[in-house]
Image (cartoon, rainbow over all chains, first blue to last red; front, side, top):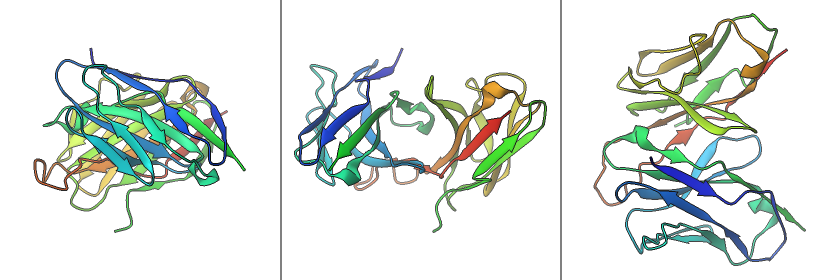
Length: 113
Length: 120
């Protein structure tokens, strides 16, 4: 079946450090891939997305590239800030049905000043 | 738009009591989702509706859970009777499939702030 696997957290970094959160997926076909972010006490919100192989999604300094050959969509940021502390969810979805959005378990990131 | 609105924000109840969680989706959205979030199981899809019709309720844990969407602007998730293991954060989300295939469409889900449920 379709699934998403994320690196387990928590991840603790110092401000201005480089961030990578790994995400791999298993899917029959070619899904769209997403990163959602959940700030403390809030619901999830879309951070970035990519719809086909080699697409790069980017937003707020975060980037992720859709790698079909490795079935991966790793999230990266060159210099994290304290305000990036949140839980990050990788997800996949096939077009045509909104109900097919499948989330990973989430990775908690804490950035220390 | 005010976004997806959930109420209450926090609910504390005793085991055996009925709990009703409420959700107002974003106007014009035709999909509505109920999720449950716990430390152990992460984010689980419980049920989703399309145009007020339940499409997939396979994630509903058991018969104690029920969800309704009487109109396009309101949905409820009910637990009766509640149990301590139901303690979690319950999220409602909405989205629209209108515009799919067009430039700029991203199919995102818009989440509410959640209801923190504690069953003692």
